[in-house]
Image (cartoon, rainbow over all chains, first blue to last red):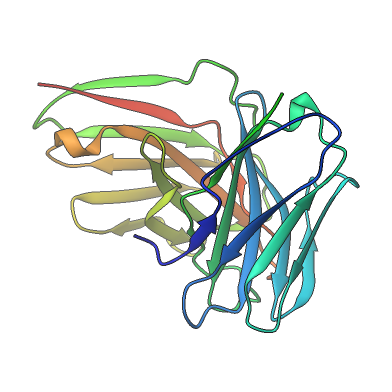
Length: 115
Length: 113
């Protein structure tokens, strides 16, 4: 158990809908990262937040957004869902995220199925 | 990194043998490398990391080797056990601090009894 929690574990929804995925980082970690894992693209970095502020952006679509709250939990919002958005979404956390050698610990993931 | 596709490279080893999983990285600016293990239905689990100023690092039953000249990373697992069955990913991070990890395609390690 990494100490990172994610809810829900599974999510099934329809095209065009909007969903919110939630992540709680390890106790004491200030940085949260979101990743998408799909069969064709593998594991891809989406976005990073550090202490409530956006720190870095990866391959995140404009239909997706995220935020980190004062209690450091984070939410990833996915809107106008398409079939291709079906994937595993992982959250990871690290102590700071300013150092390139900061270890990222991953949560168990949310499996999103868009029908 | 490359896309995973439906078929991952597979390494099949006998229980008790040593395993070597290889990874090629593409970014010369990467200065931090990590190996993760992912079991079915779970998130990636940190195994071992290495900074670019090192060429070898050892952990418990695992060793990571880094060859910056040819941009190659390897993970050696000693005395492989059934619990080592999983997909193994190498990941890299460029220097400068903020940013996510870039993952390789992954290798599926299968342990034969």
